[in-house]
Image (tube, rainbow, N blue to C red):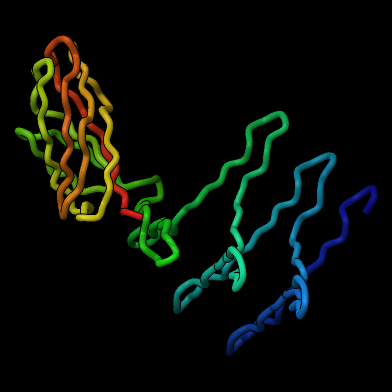
Length: 231
């Protein structure tokens, strides 16, 4: 409508009172000698209000699992496969929109997994708020932190100038093919501690540090690490 709301369009299948409900299929035609037809789903623009929302929601299951939502680019037998692009809207006078990925809640929260084409996990996020993370203090040169990321505080508070040490973190997420990213998240007083090495083996993370400062450390320092699967 030019002066009011435009008309609505509803497309749905019938309910099934004692069996499955009906399906709805919307598809473009195949192309025998050229491109197949495109399919466009979009809401209208608004000059005096917000743009319309688009909701794609899978129905719940009362006696089985919820339905699956699949977004996939097209395969190609000739060139590259199609991409999947998910982007938030730009803000002309305000902030740009966010992109949020949230796993489902339950007895155990679902996870977010980034995988390669062979379904090998590249990154696993196992909680709704982010990567599983913990912290603790080292005893001697070792600590036990069983999470994908963590912060470990050194037991030594007087690492000398040009002194180095290797810190071993027992970690159930680490494998022989894992990679680890580490940084000094809390420096020591008087010294300058840097990471010299970081590696994983089965059940263990090894992080080497060195004090490159002119003076000895006058306090403990902390190292934060993140374990990722190898590509």
